[in-house]
Image (cartoon, rainbow, N blue to C red; front, top):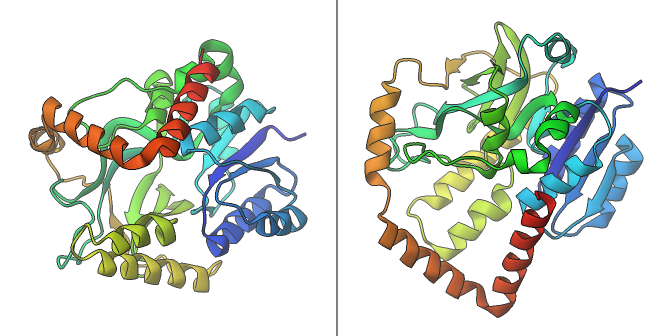
Length: 317
């Protein structure tokens, strides 16, 4: 009997998505896989349904709404939330056992990840002391495993919403899960010398998951490149693309040599958080930026965003 469901809010990246699903089926041949697909291409999802027996919904909504809908559809005790660019490298059974035995209550990656070394000609973490992600004690849902049934019974969907911490670089809606589930089991992120902007997540000497940052770069970074908003964005797109292509070419015979810690074990995290907080715009600046952004959406865009905010509020009541 299946006791774990895999859920994936998915935007784009067909090749990596196929590897993502293939890896789940390698370790879990019959577990439910639920996918919320944004951006069309039903033919792709039908191919994945045929090959991997996924259940999918074509849904034009943001990540938060997609995740809430997928969790409502989850019928097993345990859930593993994975971005489409996260690839299982080993079974999660030992961690499900740890959850069942209450040695911890959530498994994932702490939001304490630095950008790769040796790329001084551009930086993904401009102005943030080299941190890709920094919110100590928090986890995001790009890779997360926990007992969904117990969480839902206690907090419901409203428990997902996070409390803000001003000194954190990253403040995600989904941080609320690990704020409420306080006994954390962390897989540690490492950079590889071969695969660019991604991390292999290790438990001791066991590689558990590969997570490729910016897996939807075709839209996320290429759109920014077209807008010309950030100097060096073309190099960023190229860097991510090369690393992802190398990974896909090698999988499943990955070269995980030359690992280096990606969590900044030698950094003064408190000092970095204070420095990051000092760089954040004032309330007036944030308000002006928000107003400008909303003005740019136009009437239809504003209506769509308002509708999704209303849906999120309704589902979390």
